Length: 335
Image (cartoon, rainbow, N blue to C red; front, side, top):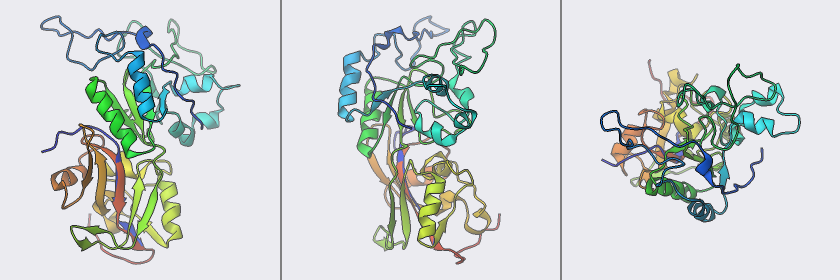
């Protein structure tokens, strides 16, 4: 079995016919030190390296990572901190916009996951918009890495960017988290003191009439990057006279946790779950290796990813799905 980790993927689905500034690599030694200890020995616990610890990468090392991903490493702040930095702040419509949140690396669709009430009950790390009156005796911290948001993010534009990030996190024993759109209701797209890999810019959509796996022609498929939102993919497939099994939330990413969690759809009674229509994944695993995953190659991982749960195995780069033409019934599932 392959040693796995939550990484970024590209997925192929079976078809049914804000602007971010570059990071200033700062000295993060000011960030609160992780002082977790073992209850049995009193010694530091085997957690991931955090700012203030000797194992945490120095400024020069982060600068080298930034260079290796062509300057796509950015500082991460919460959505409230982002809005507070705009002239006049964010409007209510902007604050509620999933499109805006998709473009802010530290923003989750459920903003409560950006706050840290847990690490220290005496002094939680929180950041509120300027229009919100914080609770009494609750100091705010809206700096880089405050709350429950990562310290840095790689705005990936290729599988190689993802590999660089995964390998860096493994080499330096860092927390690693992945965000495609930030819709995870369990907050798994964010983590304190972590390196985040954002796949929002992986927007490729490619159609093929003859997709081959193991020498067998699987017919028409669409391959989508793990940043493509459902509404974008619906528009692209409609232009081809086709449809795919997808959800109703327009800004959820198709090749993401949606598929790994099975992918419920209004079309499921007729065509099965979204994951039933996946022919192949392109993924990065925990050691930074890029793999093709289908019923022939890495078939055990293909089985595990088709409903094994979001973030439980790999980071997707893209998916391939099999399409049907609109109005053509290919199969029926009784649920």
